[in-house]
Length: 360
Image (cartoon, rainbow, N blue to C red; front, side, top):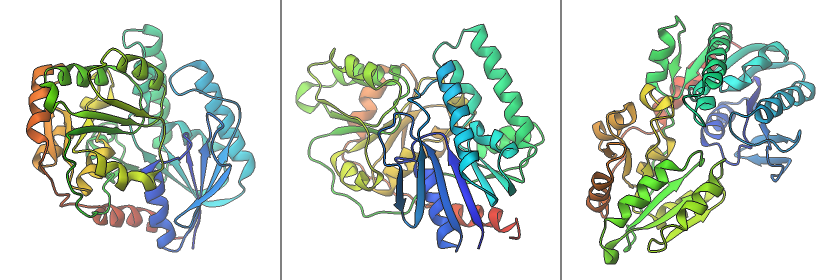
């Protein structure tokens, strides 16, 4: 049995990937504690899920985004974590902002879990900013240098693994696949769902504009559930569309997923191309989560996520900015079901093989 500490810079409330991998480790006989960052200081300080202890740190209210206060807050969080844990067998760093802990924690092995191209997020607020480009480039260099020092690297997408290989870094892709669930009855009223972090508003404006093109009597409702830096902006934006039934729910527990999925007929997972990770290989977890319950997903066309979505018949891709195309796709997908043929079992085996390679 190995003593494993997983560290993530969000509140893990929920973070499906972090919780899923921790569950795999516990089921394999390991002792796992997740250290999470309670940025808004509104979560339980200690909780447990599926045998995994979650410890949440408070170091001052810290917003999401690429601001100085965010960077400073993450530094304080890392220090709090390093002060709280002693020697461990495996330090499991979720995403690049946790990699500096390699030099602060006494661990026999370090596993770098690359969820995303973390250095691209700082550019989202202003992609043309020279300063943000400079910061992004510096973050990228730091991530690559630390990744080379990690004992093993896993990524959330095979496309990210291909990207790392261009820099001579070997990794194993462990996609955010989930267990198959019971097929849910399709709601009578067409309803579009978005469940997850709300980081920008342009995708929701695209959605709302497309719904205006659909005849009122058959126009879908919208359920947006999650937290994030742009929740307030999306709430204000929704007020401009009084003829669309838009519900915005801030935050949810992952155990609520089945009941939430029962309310929707289509999952929406389109993102602004300004996100540097879209073209490079980001695969939305919500696409797999929706498919597990039989729900189709709409994603950005001509991207890696669309390649998987359409190859596995999990939904459809729509060109960014194509309001009419999105409206037509929404109308055509309501009432359809999909099947998640490739679930988490293969990903679980790949992940545990990496951990077993440490020979603890």
